[in-house]
Length: 191
Image (cartoon, rainbow, N blue to C red; front, side, top):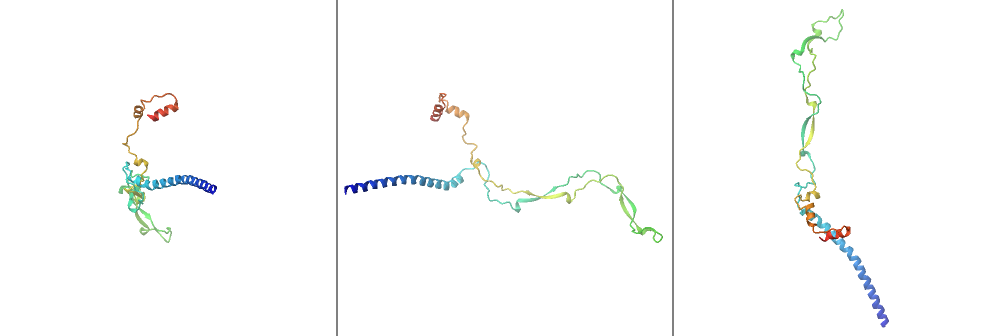
């Protein structure tokens, strides 16, 4: 009976030891999962609390709509409005044949076969005058709400205490370097 009790005690201790080992193995990843989950849930709240230094408001969901544009008339013509402009002096009144019949024994052109028209006699080219065809209508964005998402740069304080070479030299002035890379790194870290 003593042997049986001893055997049961040994088995119990082995099982208990294995259970403790498994507990340690399972607890470490479980704690890591809990820590990561809590961190990921808190991270958006931490980000929302941070001070923004970019000076811009975050607009992620603004959709550009009809009211964000204004119609603008833009000259699309390559010609200029410079040069000669035809006046009354550039035209002459002339009789122009408007009759569709040929002159023959049966038909003789008379005054009814002619019409008096103004005919351009000027040899100079007239200036181009811009008309509605010379312009196109474009949409110009006038919306004041830019789409902006805060990045790490937005949270960086440009006025923060920045390390400079002078600060490094001051902090490390008491460290004596030996020339041995490993020892020098340890000495710098300890300072």
